[in-house]
Amino acid sequence: MKTAKITFVLMAFLFTASFSFSQSVEGRLAIKGFTNGKTIKQNTPVALFKAFKDGVYSINFNFKSNDLGPEGIVLFDMKTTVKHNGKIISETSRGGWPWIPGDMFVPIEAFDAIPAWQKHAEKGLPVSIPGKYEIILQFVPSKGQKVKGSISPATMQFTIE
Image 1: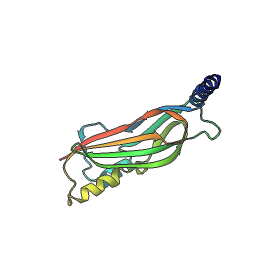
Image 2: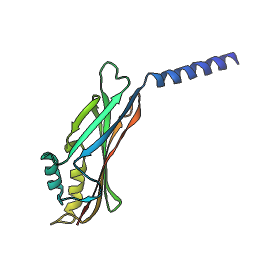
Image 3: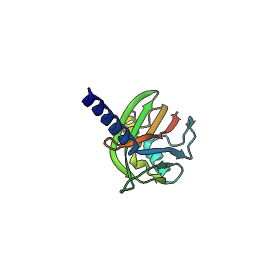
Image 4: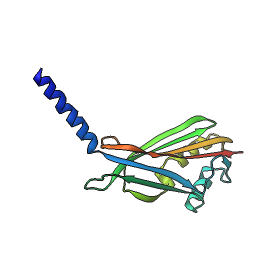
């Protein structure tokens, strides 16, 4: 019985200690220059890509952490979901991207939004498929790290007529 109590106390201590030594992150992604729900002028994936490159829209990432350890970085998986008329047409994830805390610019190429939309649009050439689109961009702490917390995703909702 004493052995069971000691084992229980040690396990509780180790469990608590693992949480106290984990990093805590919080932050958000934002798409500047974009108003959700609007009809965009860029009705092709290439035109939307060019608008990001020309600075019409930009993706900004901000996060902070309570303890970064010796490397000073957090690894994130960059997840992209693209929907057309409410139906998911693409879900992708790129794992293990290193980021340091603070304010950062994120290029559109970091996500798979443009390639996913392009593959969908190719089915309806010569013009993009009309309808309502939603692109969800997410930074999720990579597995295997002792990181808790989350980053608020960025969403683009627009209509192609």
